Structure formats: C-alpha cells, structure tokens
Length: 208
Image 1 (tube, rainbow, N blue to C red):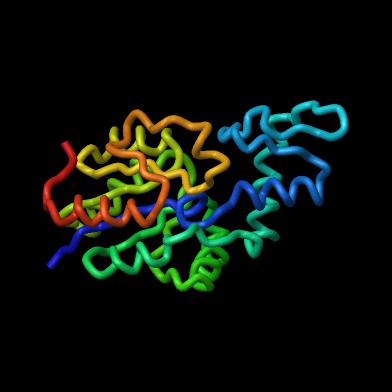
Image 2: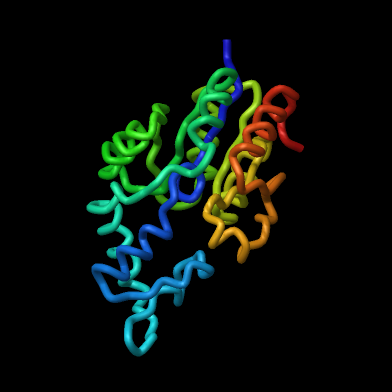
C-alpha cells in the first residue's frame, strides 16, 4: 500500500549552509559574502578592494566547501522533529543538488543529526527527478520543499500535482527574498511547516 511522499531539499531547508560557507570564505580565502545575494552572482567579493570574483571561481569554492567543510553545517531548528512527525505517515526522500561523489558524505552528515532517509543527488532542475520519484513510489499525495524558486518552477512544470512549499530556513536570507511564484505556500519554520505538510497529506488531493 502506497503512502504520501515528502521530497525535501537539504541546504537551507534541513541544514544551515550559507552562513558557514561565508565564515569559511572569510577565514580561508579573504572573501566577503553578501548573504542577501542568494544566487551568488556578485555576492562574493575580494578584500580589501571589494571586487567581485569571476563567475567561474564560485563553483570550485562551493565544491571545496562541500568536500572539506560539511562538518561545519548545523541543523535547522525543528527540522529533525518535523521529519520524525512526517515520517510516521509518509515516505521521505532528500533530494539534494550535489554531485553523486558527495552522496556518502551527505548521508553521513544527516545521519549524525539523526536524519536517516533516502538521499538522492541531482544536478540542475529538480522537476525531472521529482517526476521519477513519483513514478517509483506512486504516492497518494506528494509534497516538495525547497529554498530555490527555480526548483519550484521546474517541479510545477514536470510534476504539477505535487504540493510545493517554499522554505528558506536561514533568517539572514529569508527577509531579503520573496515567496517563490510557483510554490503553493511560503513557510520558513519547520514547526509550522510540518503542520502544513501533514495537512496536505491528510487531505489526500493532488495540488491544483
């Protein structure tokens, strides 16, 4: 018998990342990171002149952070408890935009916080992998949670029946960024979001 399905992102949804990334950039690379610039374009600047770094330098820095600094990341408040509640009534998959070579590290990282669910790595839009998970699980209802509007748009295109919750769990980011246009709701606190997710699942209906 199938159950509801929660598909959730990890960074800035389950684990804090950008503040720790910024601290590491400061310590190891003498770079400033403007947290309000969520797309990273122009957000990383050199000291002391404030010149933005080249676009092609950003991804190697992110790669290096995830390769050596994942231990810095901290659990989002109420996230583990929320997944515990949701896991009583639904299957849970963590869909994270990291290359598959980081899969083991992400699994171990989440396990250390007591989060033990299937982890799927991805590159690019999340609509197609979400559609693939729907085909695999055939859930009664599915809910998707992510911090990036581009992924809500992708899921709306490829899996329109999925309920979409926009969450930015980092307060220093959340206040600067509007709700995703393709999400059904914006909730930045798991204590409230868990009720919303479980409510959609209990209703039993696909998203309009």
